[in-house]
Amino acid sequence: MSRRRFAVVVVCWLLAIVLCSTDLGALVGFMTGVAVSMYGAALGLALQQAASLAGIALTWSEAGAVLLWSTAGALAIGTLLTAARGLVRLRQGDEAAALSAWAGTISFAAAPAALWLSLEALQRAWP
Image (cartoon, rainbow, N blue to C red; front, side, top):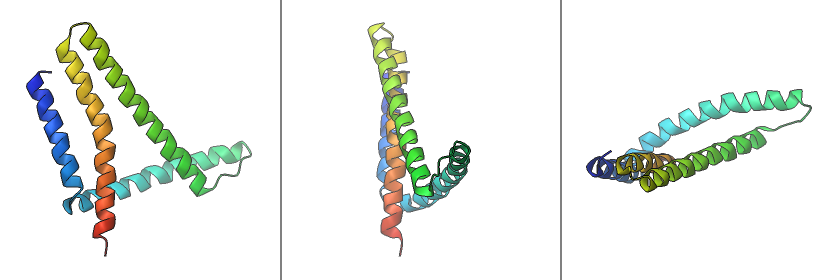
């Protein structure tokens, strides 16, 4: 990836984050809420069934907390791994591969931030 493409990725993510924090972001927040509820409902039910098979009584709030923290942990690990891969590539002298990995790092960090801001915009816009 060239420096120019990397700059375009950074600018696009910045614009997306700014737009998600506006009233337009409320629409994105609504769709995010629907997607998260579908993700959470299916996985939460599977988690509750697995826990009941093991003899553990798990409430919806506990299942939601487990899903939230595991998703956040997976995103954090993905962010750190792609950043480390970029650093390794830079040390090997491959700047294009390093920039490509760092573009992935920015995406790993910016996508949840944009979704969070859009949910906040939805809360502000809700009557």
